[in-house]
Image (cartoon, rainbow, N blue to C red; front, side):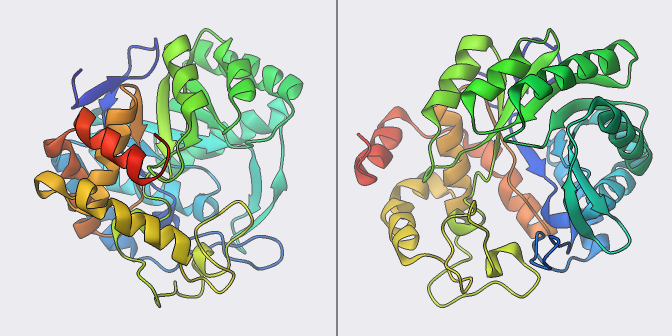
Length: 330
């Protein structure tokens, strides 16, 4: 397989095998109770430099969402891409409702009417005339209502506003609902070496979809930056993790059991001169030929490290087997 590129399902849209997730560059935002949903404060100028550095290093796929920073991530990404818009594939998401003024998530809306409003707003914030991959961001939406949204996405494709679409969900049955649409090209799901997703890998293989893999570094745990005793800053979602974010305790520190598993894998993941993060990305490519992991980033240095994984390629079959034995999954 070509480690450098992937095709999004049957869309003919080609992307780099590594994408960049733009949640973190959205900056701080919060839920209705004031709990953080972002990754803390960011330097927008550094974010712009990091996006452009990623482009220079061969990354052509950027995944954001209208809710990230309540619109801020899309604005920063659009500014960073500028005249290079046609050199990249942009994925964004819709379904959440938010207040940009207070940077607060206020709810969700699974209506076709909201989908159109959200698409119009995303196009404006990104400064573009089309979204390459438009993704439903409500992971547990009702399947029957989601089927209506799939049909709405088909309308967007016919109008030239969207090239392909997907559902960001960890439920294979829900993913199948969107996959019935002619222009569904992918499913986005959580996957990393600590949290495998065999049913979704199999679904992508069966239906010919790309697997857009979020949280490929387990919210930073696989990047080596969360050793014992380190706690994320206030304003970082990991400082007060919600129930759906495992690996961090209520005080924000990394779970010791998770850290122990990371330590057990370190020698395999860092083989061949890889960093731990590069090894974690290499595992995903070895695990599924349809994988497009989208690690987050906030700095040029992180962009360079993540993009550097492309040069190393996937883990070998022997290394993949070692990982499974070390985690007791063999």
